[in-house]
Length: 382
Image (tube, rainbow, N blue to C red):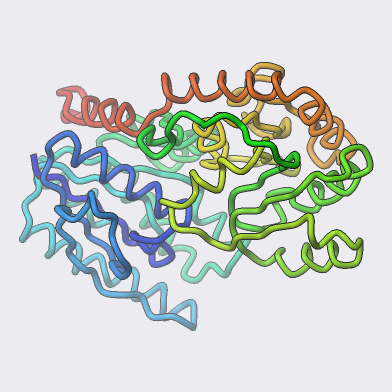
């Protein structure tokens, strides 16, 4: 089977280390492991690809110009013509697309060619663009999203709220397909070495990830656990502020920020942690499926998160981690203190979390489910 994987999002370097890049790579990897011939169509093919994905053929798409938003949006719309031509040339057996702003040609081509059309959607992109960047050509963006949703034979939404959004703009045969892990990247943990209790955070350092609450809780934890350390694996706009706060508190030696690491280095970094945190703030429209939580669990770390969205369904309070109220630094401090004072319990939670994700949330199982559904007569007929 020849699968065309389409990712037209100019913000995703497909061979990069950000979460979206890892997601792309893991789906490609799962398709390859099933014996498929895979062609990746992307405007961001730069970088060094993983050694086990060298057989993936890459078809570069026109890059979107940086700078003025309207010019960039028009270029994204125009790229639909290039995408149609590429698919005409490739004639794949199945088209799988990661939903992107202004993109509709892949799903429409597949439907017109009577090929299975799978659309993966990870966020309400139009609302996200309007809230955090600048949304140019809003009418055209909405029209493109609706065209893509209507044409898709199967829509795979990362969470329930994203699935509901997809349905409101024309998606049919919408299923929820959460994030997952690659067990090969996360071997069974070694015995814990003798070291200070280490609180961990993996991901981009942005305000909505709850980092201010985490920093406050960590400062309070140090009163009870004087040698505790905070290890942040990632980078982002909050970094300078956090480093300044630690410096002012005289705790710079207790903080380590690695910056953005390549995917291959992340498991080793997680192995240096005793707990993984995801202290999201309260959000009425929380729609995320945090990859960090799945990777914490795969690394056998207990997870401390908040009652935001469906996170308390992913992290079972008292079994695979601890769940606190969003924005409550005192509650977060208590949770971290509980784990630091009872490492056997913390390790048991981590082991339970690892068993859960390896049994229920792997990329191989995700690919199997999606392709089986996409190739069924019911979806093809829809």
